[in-house]
Amino acid sequence: MDGEGIFLGLGGGERQTLNLSRANRHGLIAGATGTGKTVTVQGLCESFSNAGVPVFVADVKGDLSGLAMPGSDSFKHHDKLVERAEEIGLDPYVYADSPTIFWDLYGEKGHPIRTMISEMGPLLLGRLMDLSDAQQGVLEIAFRYADDEGLLLLDLEDLRAMMVAVAEHASELTMKYGNVSKASVGAIQRKLLQFEGQGAAEFFGEPALEIDDFFRTDDQGRGFCNVLMADKLMQSPKLYGTFLLWLMSELFEALPEVGDPDKPKLVFFFDEAHLLFDDAPDALQDKIEQVVRLIRSKGIGVYFITQNPVDIPEEVAGQLGNRVQHALRAFTPRDKRAIKAAAETFRINPDLDVEQAITELKVGEALVSTLMEDGAPSPVQRTLIRPPYSRLGPISTGERAAIIAASPIGDRYAERIDRESAAEVLEQKALDAAETAKEVEEKGEEEVRRQPRKSKGLVERMRDAATRAGMNSAGAKFGRELTGRTSRANPTRTAVSAAGGVLTGELAKKIGVPGAGGFLRGILGGLLR
Image (cartoon, helix red, strand yellow):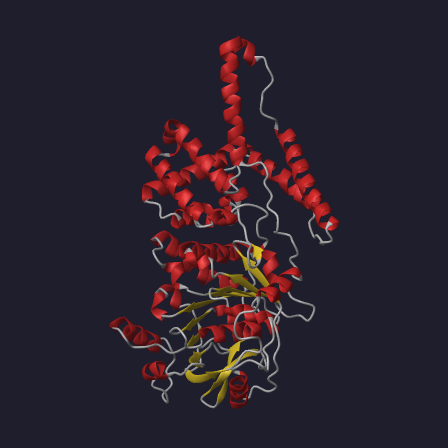
């Protein structure tokens, strides 16, 4: 730390710092492969952490897991790190770790992250599945139909069941909502199967992520580094990009306005940022721009990491006030355009030929310009980037297991909860209809009408959902304690949540307020529809 700023390195004979009160004005970290972007990001993460600011960072190569462990004198480049620290006046330079929580959509290298289908919303799902305009329209009708019928869409099984129901009621839905083509429904079902084959089923369901878990600090007041292990996720780049967009939008919707705080509430690092914008339809592109523009007022700083700065649309790039530009190589005409564009974004320094310097930067050097106290960008300086205190390179499997075991998250997300939702309700309705049809044939319609209904009422369904969820949580808790493992599960809260889910579905159907279903389904669905 440097006063109220984060020390980035030494440039132009001066200490280059990132002003904490301007850190929520977003930033860009760019440069060709192997020029030092990951080390810069690692240093920023631990500096924000030391300032009491939690961070969320996607680790696409596994190297950033080193945040969780201190560096070592036995590291092969230890002497170079010490030499750099002395050269830029980083004193004292002492190896240290940062408090770290590991996350993983697949639950393999960290705590699983899940959301409900309804919270993702039809626009993002449509993008994930590469739906045509006609197919997108049918998907949106399915969501609206689920709202009107009070059906919860929690996981992929629910969505598949909902699409079957849409096909079965295509004629009446066409009259009410618009054209429903069974061919479009079939195409969506096929794409759902492909989507599931990419591992997306792991991402949808409950317990859903609680955003507050990203805002933790340790007993020393340091912000936790939330590291998303994304090496496997990167094999499905569209899922990766859409997931981070969903997460950024969820933060936007969940947090109150705070204006310009003394320091950010959270800093969000988005690696391989071009995946956010690739093939995004205009409507989604507009939403991305809106979220980036407005999320700073919630105290969130977003830092895009990319190889080529021209990968970021101009409308978004214009909002990135803090910039660290590593070397670019002029191998192709596109490279040359990128170099020129990058040079033009910096505040002019009469003592520096920026366009030439970009191609001459060494590993661990960067052109740096940050927002000053008055909000104006500082003149660009060629800067020696400071070395991290934490380990350079990935941690071992055993080290990761120990950190996850000691995580403050505990086993909150470890076990899936499967409560009554669209798939179960629709299946029961189909069984009831088949049984009723058989009884009508045998006893006559008048006799069947006098019989009590087959499906359970609201109170019964709420009671059963609560009992089932409570028993599952309590049983799992007992099993963990029996084997000596600790549990942070709260059976009462889980049971109340399950019963509340049934009630939410009924309220969405009965409350009679326009848009109530969308509201109860979650704010994000409304934002991104």
